[in-house]
Structures are given as C-alpha cells and as structure tokens.
Image 1 (cartoon, one colour):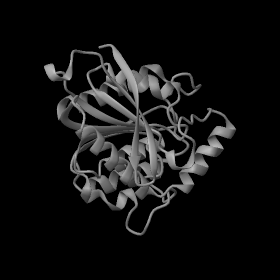
Image 2: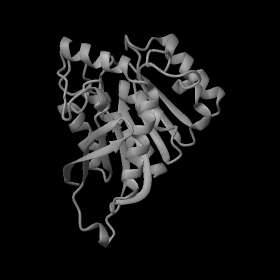
Image 3: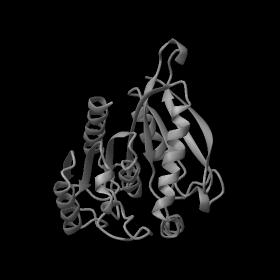
Image 4: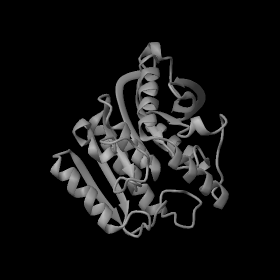
Length: 249
C-alpha cells in the first residue's frame, strides 16, 4: 500500500506532543477503510529518517502508525537529534530527566486521540526500537494494547529510567494483557546476556504470552544507514512484527 503522512499535535498533561501519523492511502473511511493502529516509539533521537522509514514500512502493510516525540516536554516541537555525540548526549540527558509515568499519560492521550479518528478499527498495538522498545513495553501496560513488538529494549533490566517506587516497567507485569514479541541482539553492548536472562525469567514467571528471539547482531541493527545495520536480519524482524500484528489485530 502507498502511505500518506500528516502531523497531529496532541495535548497531554505535560504539554503538547507532536505526533507523526503514517497511514495507508485508500478510500474514504466512511466507505469502510478502517485500519488497526500501531504506537511506534523512536530511539532517543525522536523521528529521524530511519525511524520515519521504519514506520512507513509498517504502515504500508495496512496499519496507521503514530510516532510521538517522546521527549516533547524537554524540546521544541519538531526536534530531531542527530546521530552524533551531541545528539546522543542530549537524548540520554532527556531520558534521565523524564519520569516513566510521563510516558503513561502520553500513551493515554494518544489512545484517546486514536479513538476519535474515523480510520480507527478498534485495534491498537505498539512497537519500538532501543528506548522505544522499552516505551512500547510500557505502552503494553494500557488495557487497549493488544500486542507489542519490542526491539532491543533498553533499561528493562535496570533502573536507569526515573520512576516512582513500584512503577518500574518490570514491576507492573500484571498489567500486561496483550502478547509480546521480544527481539534482541546478542552482541548488544547496552543489554548484556545477564540482563536479557533477567527479563526472560521475569516474563516467564509472570506467565505472560510472549515470543523471544535473539540474533547475532549489535545494538541498533534495525537502523538503516548505521554501520551496525543488518539488512537481512532487519527484514526478518519486520516480518516477525507483522506476523504478530496480523494474528492479534
């Protein structure tokens, strides 16, 4: 399917959140062209070219994809950080400054917005890369989320992202009702084997419905243009995510 893009500025309790919407080109929604929706979470750099391309890949398979500016409280609207040391430092500082509960209200605002749209078919999933993998996991705490694809989700095994007591994502597994797809790179220097094992064991103990895939790949192996990009593995991982979404939504 061809894809069209637009912008929505969504009000949240912590300010206006610019959200980029990519959706299939079709007839009028009144004629029955409704689609499942994916909340798509970026890396710390927000909607860069590779993130936009990834979102459009998913949208071209028949999904409306929303990409929020994850650090909207901390940057001017439209901010995109560069893939360089300065961008990385700023993105990591933003990650350290935003409480995880802020992402919950962001998710709730996006879900409320989606429910008002004439293209909404009643199904919502989530997906994300790096910190976005964690934020997609966080979105899965919302009862409306039917399935979630997490790509090398950082900080699930640690307490790096600020949170109130009892609010770390791994402390709220009982709130997850949808299916999870967990994808990792075995050579990811941000998520060691012990960390992945910890996450796997906790998901298993919580009796969650999930699939688990580890590839011989580095961190950011989905990022087209990066020296760590693994095109063949990335293609397979897109298919895994699309399989999840097609089965559950």
